Length: 210
Ligand code: URA
Image 1 (tube, helix red, strand yellow):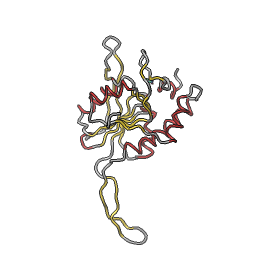
Image 2: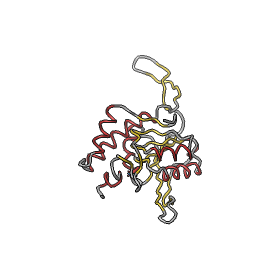
Image 3: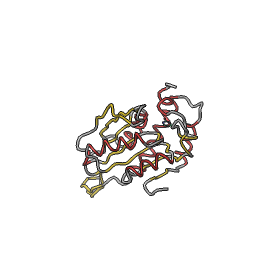
Image 4: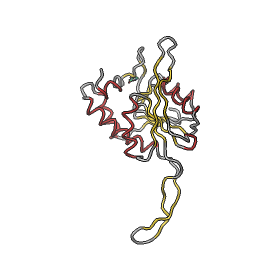
């Protein structure tokens, strides 16, 4: 496994992921589990956020205490499934600014085409965390990161729930500077681009549209 890919093998993450994979899990439970796992994954992906010391007063005395330094983080959802991961990260980092990238696949060229792009200002000064539960082909993730780099982002991390080896290869080739954090790396992509064994279409499962 590339050094830029971290698989969070915490037992709570793995247990909740199993519940999410099960075909019978209803949308309401699926969404709740995604929020909970995302919170745990976010703990890992924010591990290297910079700190500075500031002077505070406890009830007993003054001290120099660590607090987050620099601009607030930018959290960027790849529409639509990425939205299911926003609340988990925001619970941990409520001051994060939120952006959205919308991409669809052109059926003729099979390439991702942008239809929406709204991100926080001063991306170049922020840690940018891109969320999308399924890193499948990696095409839309790589395209989203291209757009964010074009908008100035320099410190980007990618947070997903499940990754296919093909998607990891695509992302680490296109963007070797972008660390990936995931709960699991599954076996392969199907010929229709689904992750196997996977959990199906994450957007459909969270929004009840299948
Ligand atoms: N997107 C999904 O929602 N599921 C997959 O398996 C692949 C891409």
